[in-house]
Length: 66
Length: 458
Image (cartoon, rainbow over all chains, first blue to last red; front, side):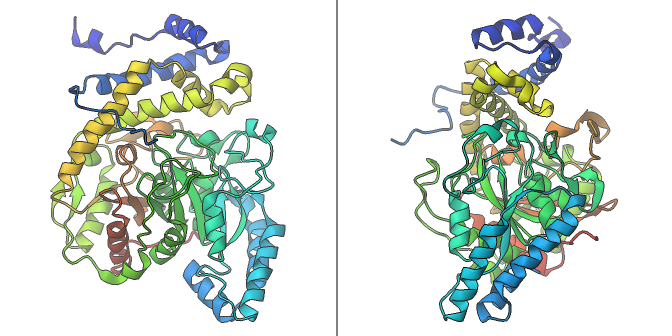
């Protein structure tokens, strides 16, 4: 797989519509392109997050204080 | 006039609070149409509060350290009798607030007088205050340009000289970006330091609240009056009050101060970096440091913001998406769809990143960095360039603030200069709970003339 393909967005319109249905959300037709473009921008940043080399000892930031 | 001087005059009986507050309203009504910083005025309650202060002074009672100081708040703070709009049309349907937000209560207990609420990006999701429902807030230094956001009204009202003190919120830069764009002082305290009680949320993991002012002493006086734990905010549990006003003149001797390079240089225009360097030079700072993994810290904040923000508004997105501001609704809809694994990984990356930055703070006390990549863009401008790369203006105005709020560090935004007639700000960053160091450096910059609030000409 080329580097370019690695960075290609995996989120597309079909993914957005199906995931929205799971969330009980009906994305207005007029907003769909903007939502997909936004998702693709977030996907780029999520890639940076997901590639961070964490260990099992790296806890999530929020700590519940009962 | 600054807050500290106003309070001194009112406390001495040299100035009646009621006269001053009446004059403040006349000024707002005469001039704010140019800036659109205010949304609601609270004239009746303000005049009553001012009269109470005048009565207290006349009777020889202490009217409080901020006696008679007019202040205004971003309209996500609860104000008794008003719906908490948070820049939205949807919230007009909510019942009116039955109690003031905690910080309003604390400022009024110190004698300050609430005069109104201020414009913002809808639900605080933006860096420009180009609000479709209430109109854009205009930058008082050049009304063709944005004021920054999301606390744009809070910064513009100070820059225009309408009030000496305002409150805003900062999830990813919403105090620091408008401070930079409008040339005012702003404080984003440590996460959990100031209570968010009675404020409309955006991203619980990242939401902070704090003051804007025209001088370091005013910022400190407001901050000192607002500290303290609050059962209305689960993050605000610190009982200790670390007053900063008494140590403002302590200077910077012995402090290890450095200018941030790496990410913070690469993502700012050269002219902006030069302004930060000039401020660093004025303090005799020669050291540079790299805040490690800032890009990942920012990415984590971005994912968390999208996810928590989208989830918070999911019920209304399902039933009335058309009532949201079109400028933000795509981001909320997208955020509501993100995989849980991304969100949880982002929360773990925050902790990982925090550990690295805490190691850096073992060798340095205060870090100086640009607050925004460039000065304010024009209203309606979709893109801008940073070092030759074109990018979307609205999300990227926070490129340099997000890595800092991502892990809740205290920051003062300092007005350090002008570029092509528009202000630019610098972040003064310290380790958690060390706002005192930010204030000492800020005051020293002010004393040496390397940072100063310059009111807009009108």
